[in-house]
Length: 210
Image (tube, rainbow, N blue to C red; front, side, top):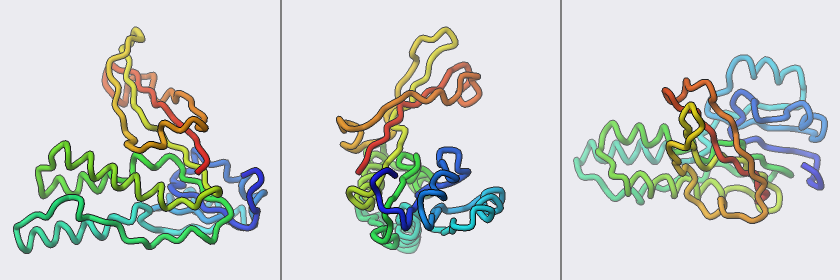
């Protein structure tokens, strides 16, 4: 937030506010807008106490309606167009904000969309990757330059109980992961082996100003 204007800020993917220092932000900015597809009841109650936080419900990716239309066209005509024809609706205007925080959602934006598409088609690995790349590229392009912070986990690592590496899975397919200016750390997501059976799960995370 340092050296940014203090009138307004937007948090994209606010969720349960686990990754958002909302009290500090509410003291710094005159107004904060939290964007998500759904705001938990606990969070709605919590932000009322702050007074300067507003909740906005939206599809941050911009792809939900186009994906629904794509499936509908297929079901009506039984001919599926190329996956790259799914393009987002540009309904989210972030230019009004002094600061925009994309809060660990970059690799999540396409998950539900891909699951929905998979109910109707057998998507190839190439199609899944192409769609994921497009969603992520569009999201980063949406962020106002020199006023945005992107935090994202970009690689999942699983280890055996003894600490041996078992697997790595890349989840962000964008050049931003190679940024030399990014801060990086390893998130100990699950060391009790409940997320993956008999495996400890870690995420490589980056934070970078856009």
